[in-house]
Image (cartoon, rainbow, N blue to C red; front, side):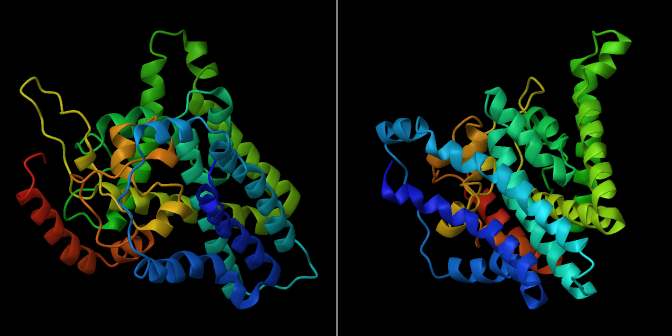
Length: 354
């Protein structure tokens, strides 16, 4: 491992800021939001983008080093500790928290769950090892988005950039409508995928072996535990931070595949997923903070490839801004359409592959 690989320690700035927001409260309640959506987008406009890739030998070496997996796994105890500290603080009668502080804390902790929960679960969930899968599911639990583990791996990666995929945004579709469509259809899609997987089992086995049943029970138990231990304030907080976390994910889904589509072949099937079916971003700081999620083109091209060795592809479409800034732009549909529709049309005109 090289000293430069320690750059991924910067990703822990997000959960550390969450602890600081809960500890200091007041204006500090918004600290994680400010870091993620004010400071990071600003810095990304200054720091140059990197399009460099590792050579084959270096990539193989980095893929085998355990430290990169450890950096992911550490997010689980960090999040669990943060949640306990957060709920305990809210439930402390000696600490008075205003409504505006609550909003800031919901945003800050929700962003931590999105960046260090769902995002890390996304990376771990693609790995074949049982420990990785269990950690992914545990990270998704407080986000109330455990169905993502099923739908993303067996649905989204199969149908991405086609009308069959609810997590692929269409040209001209605004992010708010996309939220409703993707959240509802992805959830139903996960149930459908489990029903299909268990279609030859007995009626009892269709319930006992159904992961969606398991996930529903686990998430319900989590909420019941929070309510029992921390009361209504804890339950409202748990629901609020989960909402922030998965809307963060869905906004990322929105910008990652906006308007891109796979061609349908003569046999009725869609062409193979290629690097040009996802928007890419080489903004260095965003790559580090999100464990290379922004190199999304290569991830969809080779889903099992580890985050630390994801490549840049010259033929993949590039977002004009980094992920945080693009997400903010998406929240203003007229601005998003003005920028991205023009960029999308230009890319399609100049590409023979899309």
